[in-house]
Amino acid sequence: MKKPIALFLAAVMCLSALAGCSSTVDPGDTRTITDSLGRLVEVPENVERIVCVGVGALRYTCYMGGADLVVGVEDHETTEGISRLYNYVNFARFKDLPVIGTNGEPYVEQIIAVAPQVIVMSKYASVDADELQSKTGTPVVVIPGSDTTLDEDAYETIRVLGELYGMEGRSAELTDYLKGVQKDLDDRTKDIPDDEKPSVYVGGVSFKGHRGFEGTEAGYGPFTLIHAKNLADTTGQTGAFNIDLEQVLEWDPDIIFLDFNGMELIREDYEDDPVYYDSLTAVREGKVYSQISFRAFASNLETALADAYYAACVIYPEQFKDIDPIHKAGEIFEMLLGVDPYEDLEEAGYGFYPIEIGG
Image 1 (cartoon, one colour):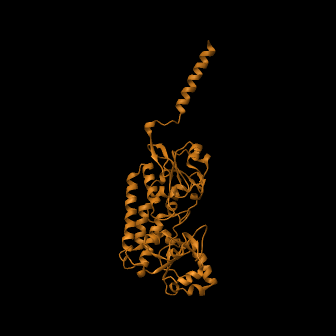
Image 2 (tube, rainbow, N blue to C red):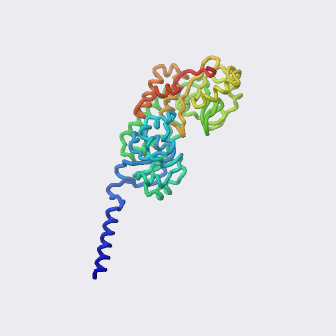
Image 3 (cartoon, one colour):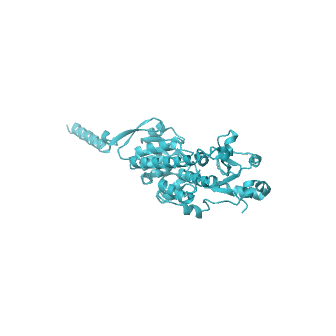
């Protein structure tokens, strides 16, 4: 008799232990949201611990004011980067967090170890969402992110994260502000006839590494927002590409903008061939201006919008005579980042001002 009783008691104890250790969440404590892939994902009612996988996921989480939810980061976030202002202003939070992936490739065991309630994954990540969810046992919510400025992907990302984090108020505030910025830029520039606009060229645009003067972009985000007469748009190309420098000479743009990412290469090239640059009217007339690099792993929305206002003030001085671009940049930074790091950017060699290439 003793043996059956002992076995019975042991079974009861095991069942009790399993019940106590179960990770099953009461259905009342969860909710279902639809992510950007149309997946129905069951998530906790209150999300307090997350990790972000893939470019844009952490960036937009910071724009939402959700940096404190993050319990692990991808490896590049443990290095401070002023070219990624979301990282720069939150670096004290991120620098000592466990590393849970690299460049959109998640480390499954490390994610499990930090025990997030939700994995926020951008569409640029290198893993299937359902596969990652299965391997980690953690809900995966996919957001689109954005590699330009104010497109539908940007607004969709803000909407999904607002619902996920229970920050619908912040989502609405941010959306209203950004739509206001977009409308302001559009209203001031959309009715200006093309034949009254100066032609513009942007050089030094990065893609797959830093580029010199030949690195340009069709559909350059800041220019698109202000209907600028971007010469690269006439090529039939899309996105960033290298252009034949003789074509730029033939165009002889009225105004040139240079991305700081390419300035070292541009200055080296100037030393090798100053005659080329001095043949450009904009260079001779001092109409060369800066653009703070807004791409680092993807588009930094706050910097891209600040660039748009600065470019607009240069291209359309009458329409933007009431705008101080540095003050406007500060306003945008405050809204998206919670602080204004413009002075830090300037001290690091970035800022809004005319550029003397050979200087």
